[in-house]
Length: 187
Image (tube, rainbow, N blue to C red):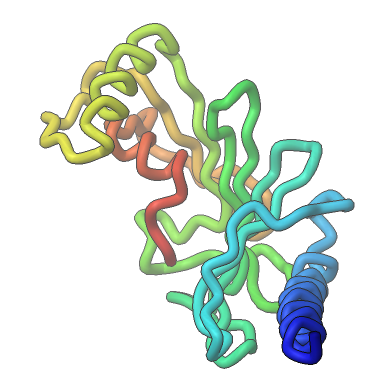
């Protein structure tokens, strides 16, 4: 009987430790004013040493993600600490890059130094055909660059949310959009 209570107590400590960690991570999500609350953890890949990534989601179809190292916020390229993904009808609409204070931050390592990338699916039915091919291969498919088919257009914005003017519309490939949509890359 004593070992049963010891086991039960150990389980309680483990659960309360996880809850406390999740609560600690919520502090980071709460400091981002653009990210709607309440939020819940969508994905938690933080290991016992406090290293990894975490994603929060909310009722507005936003996903906030960030990485930790030893339970401290880890900065990526160009000092990007957070990314917010905005979805509408299962389509990725926009990604915002934020610094550790939650302010938009541009990155000279990106194509145009953008802080925001907005996606416009101009040919949804054609994209869905290509998406099915990519999904069926679980992303492991070598596709030719179909950006010349003008399926997905992107618009870039600076830290003041002003469009970064391009000489002509910019299109990306279906596979690039698919990868962005499932949040494969990190800054």
